Length: 185
Image 1 (cartoon, rainbow, N blue to C red):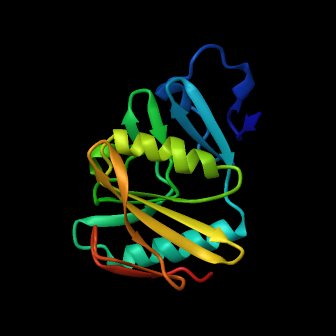
Image 2 (cartoon, rainbow, N blue to C red):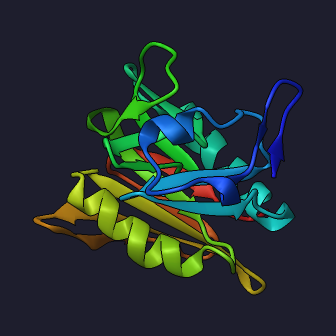
């Protein structure tokens, strides 16, 4: 059950396919990440400490390096279509007005920090959906015990190809703009 001071919502009491309106009506202050794919919800907990540290390193580096007209944001609702809304761990998008749903057309890069509970979803499902929606770049960060790694994928036709991979705990990118990201957390 998701509860806030004004409303009580039970995801389990919902009947039929979920709509974007249903998802947007959920309380904003949940401790879960809620995403929508074709009438189904994907619900996952917020990331653990290694996830948050990796996210902070990447998001701060992207934010500092963003050229004028772009911004880096953590955890925004990205509207892929009326039946699909994802929440990447971080984005680089066209800077604009404040809104609850970021149109996918404004997205330059979507990024995910892998967690055991979301690993397959991030590597397969979300990667495929971002490619299908035309997101130019997809950045995957993997906080492993042996050291954090990162891979940048660039859209090539209907799918992604590897454009850059971290070496020695550093990811140096030229696209979508020059940035060096220290992955040590």
